[in-house]
Image 1 (cartoon, helix red, strand yellow):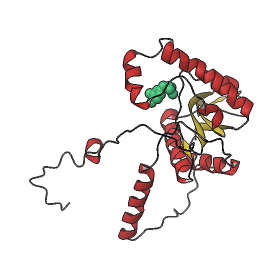
Image 2 (cartoon, helix red, strand yellow; image 1 turned 180 degrees about the horizontal axis):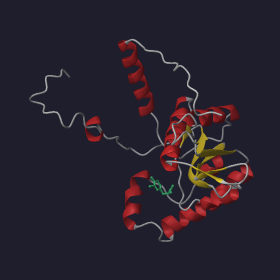
Image 3 (spheres, helix red, strand yellow; image 1 turned 90 degrees about the horizontal axis):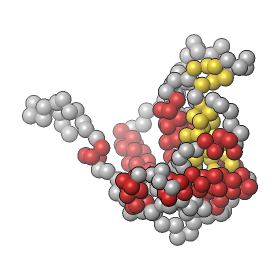
Image 4 (tube, helix red, strand yellow; image 1 turned 180 degrees about the vertical axis):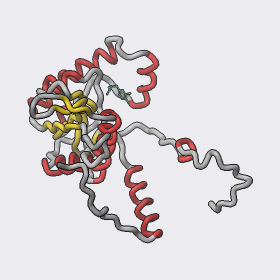
Length: 234
Ligand code: IYR
């Protein structure tokens, strides 16, 4: 059984200059990632989707339970069914009173509405499910830990993997998402977490003019150290 065996860590130190160069270039690459809502119908090989899922699945997880399942959909009829069901929920959100006025106001800069044509245009929809608990061969439940946090980290790595391979995606969360479990025939222990349309951006695709927060806005370094008495060079 697994659990008690240990192996040597494969870890390579880089020269400091090399570390800085890698950090800068990865940062610049990730800065170019955008949520894309206009997709080309150009096909994307299944192997790329498999690799994005494998990278996502390298995420850490509570007690290494890996409480996630990725369901990849390319069949046009299945995508159309997802679009129809998603748009029904989105219509309730935007026009049926499900969203508060404040929420709709907050979304204005994104320019979104209930129409989700990308769910059919994009060659793939990858639906990420959070596995609430495991199921043993005898049908008994196996407890998972930090399923949301773990699945969220897998989602982040999926975004990075898709971006890195030269494709675009979007975290789409129509609410509620129960239709995805029904349409895709998922069991009781799986709850839809997010769906990712994946493909090439449409030619001429546009994205909202959003600013990312600065380092100063998102990071605090050594809040307990008095700057006067600190001799640490910066
Ligand atoms: N699910 C809707 C609304 C929406 C909600 C949030 I929070 C967003 O960041 C973006 C959209 C939609 O996809 O249009």
